[in-house]
Length: 341
Image (cartoon, rainbow, N blue to C red; front, top):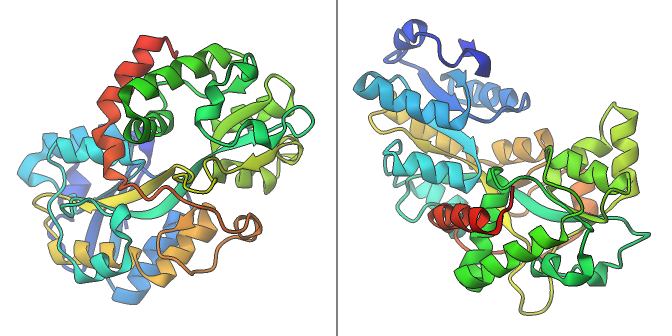
């Protein structure tokens, strides 16, 4: 197996090119940076005998690389996180259409691109974390409530450059319209307790430190902190409470994004690549997603991490995740207009 780190993504492709047409292999360009994904590759090889070759890099870098390589590209599969990044790859012509009975039957319709350009294999929820000493959860029942003037100076959230926030705003555009989404974004800017800084874990830490009272983060960062070997991270996570927004009767449910993958146009190992995509929808792979990075499986009814189980049932937004990409350009414009740094 060859494995090239994200830091080396710009090196020449001589070693990769020699594997492009190797029988019994599949070449994956992955923007997922989770060590646990190795278990997925190992399980696929064990089941099929097909060797997995992985090139890791930033999503945009990988898209540009595939375009630069053209018909000579050894890439069979591109994997990344967030529907907006999948959409960018789709827009740049990276993905080929896949019509697989296995994928169509195993994966919910809203987790599949309508034309089979890419597929969501893991779910990540963008949720609230709040200080139970200063916030009544009834104050923050919905994403829309983050714009309530009563929360002025109490909200921590990442930069508008963050694709997770772009997709959250894209979902609000879908449900509340562009005008409503812009009013929301302006309200959140007005309520920020500090200028946007840091990653998702930093937002949770800010609530624990009293810098703000409610923060927005993807759910798995919180579980990582609870299970961290770093005592300060674990302590911070234990000080906050989690809340899944928009759970009321008739409401849409919590915002859902995906980790996903698609078949690269012109994939040299086409059939092996389809087998890999179908494997990602299997019970075994879905459980590995759930246990390895604390993500929710896309296939319902499978075992998940104990912490995730403890949260009980909750309503998920069932909008097709492809709209999160389609609405991304408008989301970016709105962020710019309201001065969300």
